[in-house]
Image (cartoon, rainbow, N blue to C red; front, side, top):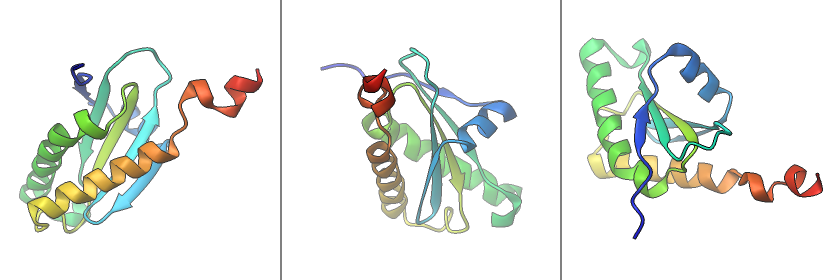
Length: 128
Protein backbone atom coordinates (compact mmCIF):
# COMPACT_ATOMS: atom_id res chain seq x y z
CA UNK A 1 0.00 0.00 0.00
CA UNK A 2 1.44 3.36 -0.99
CA UNK A 3 1.58 6.21 1.48
CA UNK A 4 -0.51 9.31 0.78
CA UNK A 5 1.29 12.31 -0.72
CA UNK A 6 2.67 14.75 1.86
CA UNK A 7 0.61 17.89 2.54
CA UNK A 8 2.22 21.32 2.80
CA UNK A 9 0.61 24.65 3.63
CA UNK A 10 0.06 27.62 1.33
CA UNK A 11 1.28 30.67 3.23
CA UNK A 12 1.79 33.63 0.91
CA UNK A 13 -0.77 35.79 -0.85
CA UNK A 14 0.56 35.00 -4.38
CA UNK A 15 0.02 31.28 -3.71
CA UNK A 16 -3.61 31.92 -2.73
CA UNK A 17 -4.17 34.21 -5.73
CA UNK A 18 -2.74 31.60 -8.10
CA UNK A 19 -5.07 28.92 -6.69
CA UNK A 20 -8.02 31.28 -7.20
CA UNK A 21 -7.41 31.05 -10.96
CA UNK A 22 -8.05 27.30 -10.90
CA UNK A 23 -11.29 25.35 -10.69
CA UNK A 24 -13.72 26.11 -7.88
CA UNK A 25 -16.51 24.17 -6.23
CA UNK A 26 -18.93 25.39 -3.53
CA UNK A 27 -20.67 22.83 -1.35
CA UNK A 28 -22.66 23.69 1.76
CA UNK A 29 -20.40 25.48 4.21
CA UNK A 30 -17.18 25.44 2.19
CA UNK A 31 -15.73 26.59 -1.13
CA UNK A 32 -12.78 24.62 -2.49
CA UNK A 33 -10.44 25.98 -5.15
CA UNK A 34 -7.96 23.68 -6.90
CA UNK A 35 -5.06 24.47 -9.19
CA UNK A 36 -2.77 22.05 -11.00
CA UNK A 37 0.72 23.44 -10.36
CA UNK A 38 2.09 21.62 -13.38
CA UNK A 39 5.28 20.65 -11.57
CA UNK A 40 6.59 17.19 -10.84
CA UNK A 41 6.43 17.53 -7.05
CA UNK A 42 4.36 14.71 -5.59
CA UNK A 43 2.81 16.69 -2.79
CA UNK A 44 -0.43 18.44 -2.03
CA UNK A 45 -0.48 22.03 -0.82
CA UNK A 46 -3.45 23.41 1.10
CA UNK A 47 -4.43 26.85 2.33
CA UNK A 48 -7.33 27.99 4.49
CA UNK A 49 -9.09 31.32 4.62
CA UNK A 50 -12.15 32.96 6.14
CA UNK A 51 -13.34 36.47 5.34
CA UNK A 52 -14.63 38.99 7.84
CA UNK A 53 -18.13 38.45 6.44
CA UNK A 54 -18.50 35.27 8.48
CA UNK A 55 -17.69 36.91 11.81
CA UNK A 56 -15.04 38.26 14.13
CA UNK A 57 -11.60 36.82 14.75
CA UNK A 58 -12.82 34.10 17.11
CA UNK A 59 -15.38 32.81 14.59
CA UNK A 60 -12.91 32.98 11.69
CA UNK A 61 -10.24 31.11 13.65
CA UNK A 62 -12.71 28.41 14.67
CA UNK A 63 -13.86 28.03 11.07
CA UNK A 64 -10.27 27.67 9.83
CA UNK A 65 -9.45 25.13 12.56
CA UNK A 66 -12.43 23.03 11.48
CA UNK A 67 -11.40 23.27 7.81
CA UNK A 68 -7.80 22.30 8.62
CA UNK A 69 -8.89 19.20 10.52
CA UNK A 70 -11.34 18.16 7.81
CA UNK A 71 -8.66 18.67 5.13
CA UNK A 72 -6.16 16.65 7.19
CA UNK A 73 -8.60 13.74 7.11
CA UNK A 74 -9.84 14.06 3.51
CA UNK A 75 -6.98 15.35 1.34
CA UNK A 76 -4.89 12.16 1.56
CA UNK A 77 -7.93 10.23 0.30
CA UNK A 78 -9.46 12.62 -2.24
CA UNK A 79 -6.77 15.19 -3.07
CA UNK A 80 -4.47 14.90 -6.04
CA UNK A 81 -0.69 15.18 -5.85
CA UNK A 82 0.67 18.22 -7.67
CA UNK A 83 -2.36 20.37 -6.83
CA UNK A 84 -2.87 23.39 -4.62
CA UNK A 85 -6.15 23.53 -2.71
CA UNK A 86 -7.66 26.55 -0.97
CA UNK A 87 -10.53 25.99 1.44
CA UNK A 88 -12.71 29.04 2.04
CA UNK A 89 -15.05 29.11 5.02
CA UNK A 90 -18.63 30.20 4.42
CA UNK A 91 -21.19 31.54 6.86
CA UNK A 92 -22.27 28.19 8.27
CA UNK A 93 -18.85 26.60 8.68
CA UNK A 94 -18.66 26.96 12.46
CA UNK A 95 -22.26 25.86 13.12
CA UNK A 96 -22.32 23.00 10.60
CA UNK A 97 -22.45 19.53 12.17
CA UNK A 98 -19.04 17.86 11.81
CA UNK A 99 -20.20 14.99 9.60
CA UNK A 100 -22.05 17.39 7.29
CA UNK A 101 -18.91 19.55 6.99
CA UNK A 102 -16.85 16.46 6.13
CA UNK A 103 -19.47 15.48 3.55
CA UNK A 104 -19.40 19.00 2.02
CA UNK A 105 -15.61 18.91 1.65
CA UNK A 106 -15.55 15.35 0.35
CA UNK A 107 -18.22 16.16 -2.22
CA UNK A 108 -16.34 19.26 -3.39
CA UNK A 109 -13.02 17.39 -3.66
CA UNK A 110 -14.60 14.54 -5.64
CA UNK A 111 -16.34 17.01 -7.94
CA UNK A 112 -13.10 18.89 -8.58
CA UNK A 113 -11.20 15.65 -9.23
CA UNK A 114 -13.84 14.62 -11.78
CA UNK A 115 -13.51 17.89 -13.72
CA UNK A 116 -9.71 17.86 -13.78
CA UNK A 117 -8.18 16.09 -16.75
CA UNK A 118 -4.77 14.51 -16.16
CA UNK A 119 -2.02 16.03 -18.32
CA UNK A 120 -1.22 12.73 -20.06
CA UNK A 121 -4.77 12.32 -21.41
CA UNK A 122 -5.61 15.93 -22.23
CA UNK A 123 -6.44 16.58 -25.92
CA UNK A 124 -3.53 19.01 -26.35
CA UNK A 125 -1.00 16.52 -24.96
CA UNK A 126 -2.21 13.73 -27.25
CA UNK A 127 -2.50 15.91 -30.38
CA UNK A 128 1.02 17.36 -29.99
